[in-house]
Length: 490
Image (cartoon, rainbow, N blue to C red; front, top):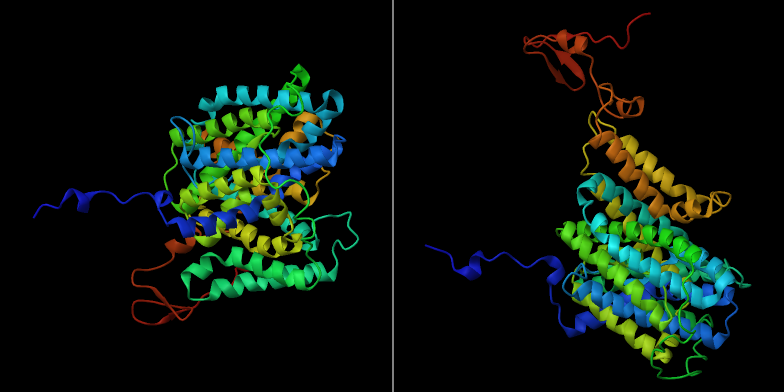
């Protein structure tokens, strides 16, 4: 009997799952709370370094929230040729902070905004090149990148757990670390419960409960929530019209290249985590959305946009794969950009509470990468060495942030990011050893040979038909034990 069209139709991809308004609101807010500290960090740092007034810094923050929300909705919902339609949260990229501070010292905020716009336009034009590299991102490369993303974010979780502000008198205090530990325990307990809804909302609920505990312990301050405007429209070109300087544009283009690499890695990583196909067209659409968002963001007073790795971790730990959930989070960000009072409420969540949740989130990213690496074939090849070298190379700027401070600025900008370092090394070594095979030795590397169980041919040749092992002993076909010599005399 022939099946109906409905029965034979392929199931929708996991990212297209529709969970309903209530779930979208709850899970979307969870995404916002997870990345809020990261999205406001860049405008705060840049504004303070540029000598802006508190009011102007506030405008930078709200502009970044507004632009990040628009970018997130473009990335998740998509337009023709723009948007990967994957559960990716977009926000201000941290990779360009040092470069933008340097530019602002010479040409002011107008020069920064102009450099971001021009470099993003160039990045938009070259995205077709990046969209054709998916075949160079097998599980070997994506696993390395996902693992490094998780490891690279762990220092962020540690700083949050210590209080967030290294200049504060209570930074690293036992009280902050205890609050982070309590939040971590709450996440684990809620995750253990049999109720699927509570388990999926464990991060959000732990943040709320942790903040409540902090409030009663006198560690959360909501007194400034009522200060300032309740509603404010995004201001266009508040800092004046952008100026375009060649040196600044070249410097920012290096940042854009790093952003393209990181966003490519995040798109491929989230595709691997939710088990959906990411081809060159989808990757290209995602990168074009990234660059278009970065091009438009300066109009509102924001900067380069990229996918947030911590939210990739949230997708992994909750198992909520719907892009509509993340699009709802983008809508929340737009509202926060228009409602400064909401931003002040979210900002009142203690950093230590975020740190406790961050340990689970970011650790889950690393664990997802390890799971991907378990699918890789390590027999008679250099894949183990590629994994070891790439992750080790990516860990250098994480373990020693000042490692590249004496290198040229363009080099330091690229390799100061552990994610970019690991991604570039993994791609390069995969090309050298697995694609450009000319010159490869037919002998295993000592590192690879040492990790695999091997038998010499002459040992196998000494076995007879019917020989078998039982309980660690060798017997012949008649059941008689064959003596095994532990080592040959020399």
